[in-house]
Image 1 (cartoon, rainbow, N blue to C red):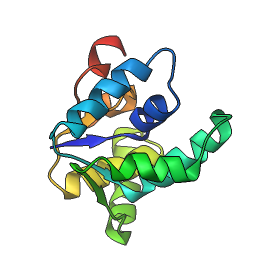
Image 2: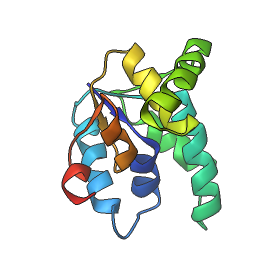
Image 3: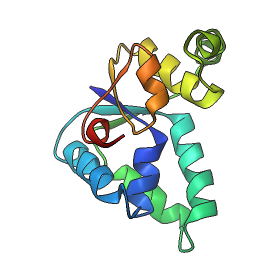
Image 4: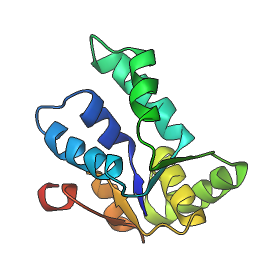
Length: 135
């Protein structure tokens, strides 16, 4: 199982000209049965970013598209994740958002992340899939 970072959803739903195709390929893998996980904070951050970036963004469409990802587990963000994230920030030189993703992934025993964020290269979690070759 792999963790899915915010940027994958933003690129997929925003049809990003540079990374949209790669993000869509990752989402197709999940649609086709690859088990994946993300945090509830990812949904909130994706909403905030798409609301700012996409002219035709619809909250209802966002929810509908997420609900079709049957093999994507949405993990609640726990207070323990915040505590761990605060510890991880200076250890790996991460901002709070990335540290929250890392803390959640670690709690769930996940060792790979779909992301083009090179900040994760400083952590024990490894970037997986299409983004690693181009980032």
